[in-house]
Image (cartoon, rainbow, N blue to C red; front, side, top):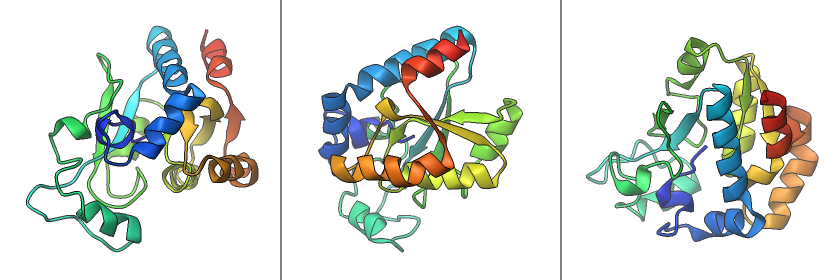
Length: 185
């Protein structure tokens, strides 16, 4: 989720999440997970966010979306900043144009159902909103969720750890990338 150049890449306008992933080894963990998924024939779906050009956001009805308006050139549809950082052959991209979670208003649910998915292994950012929101939406739609805690980040790190400890443990099965990859093999 949202592992995009303009969010976690070196050129990001919001560098703290990418810095946290780098500092904790999260990028390496994500790469191991994606490699393991592709080798096992598990579908890789990138849930991304992108904005319309021309200063016409889909909504600024939350403070984080209002702040995004101040970065009008970041995450534009079709731009390099909107690209996933680890896209591979055969991966699927489901782009969101509004909101803060990946299911509402997108074709993510239909895409996952078409792939025969019953369990989502959720990695990326952010533990502040996106990851918990995706968990809640996925559970409401009937999916099981696994979160490899070594492949997610939030800001600040202490808060991110509390989200895992006090919230995610009730929503998702917590694991590590190596445990997930071992289960696939």
